[in-house]
Image 1 (spheres, rainbow, N blue to C red):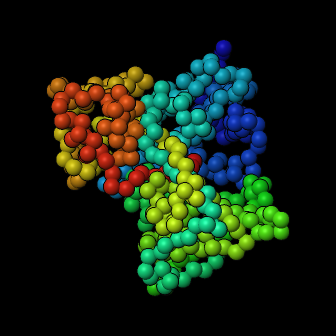
Image 2 (tube, one colour):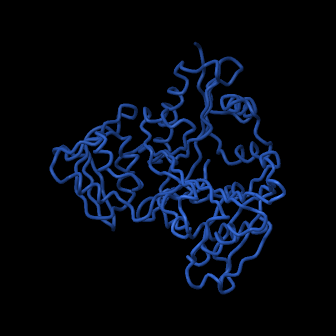
Image 3 (cartoon, helix red, strand yellow):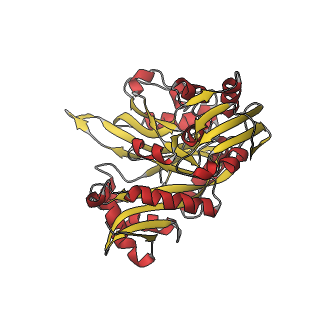
Length: 409
């Protein structure tokens, strides 16, 4: 097979994107979606594999800043739009793109690469580890009630057109970014994503709606959602489809969820990609009637082990030597001494004896604090070489709150 791998040229975008759509089943996306992705994808950060005039492989990398334990926002390549034309599967096209992309990310000075996977089994061989999980719920609001904290009655809720409320919502979101590892600081242009609402994607639901929560005259929370009406034997049985909920206070958060669960003519609330430690799970009266379901979310790849491990803080003091295996990015392989605490960290090459042995994939899983090194060791994926090193490292890598990716890309 004779193919050419090259940086995407603007004139080739339509052909390139059509190949991506074909790889995902051939259903065209709404024009406004395509236009937004094109606007957000910076020049020089997308690759295509070409077989003559046909694009047969696609991938891109957004320029993100992601919150890590300690609250710092670290540069990360948001890997996206990965697809291989059905005629060229299992011919090394994906591997070729992943190789070039990680070389580029390293050259850009971004210590992390992150992605959400359409098929989770694909990316482990390229060094990505599952670092965050999310929970989805389907709440039977005819049987579930919320127990809200004192003061919730004082929260003022008001409806607002999503576009008009966007700046107020973004202000709340920006204040939340440092609160959880895994959250993305939205760069200019990304504020359009949460309110993107193509009519062809609604599947019988209403246009996007927004409710703002106010305390002491300032906006402290918001919820964006749609309502899908339904009637069963003349009985209203609609569904509230929650897109996102953010709040700066427990009272505002509870008030917003109470609003969503008590809307007239509805019997269900669905919400996807919520944090696994979402306070909502402690507000509901019957968790079983919420049908919680956990799945993988963000996959993390350490492109520069030393820089990535030094960029975050650690929950407790740690001083361990890591023997890192990384066949795909061999510049990471070898021994690294990690020294850190809640105030900062350093990670440097060393010739000292190793305390733990693991691959870069396990480091990616543990990096944001949501996956325990002890759990990975229990699966045989981390080996303890010095007694006590696993307990020390597992405690240090942990996070007080579950890492969470609030939206896909």
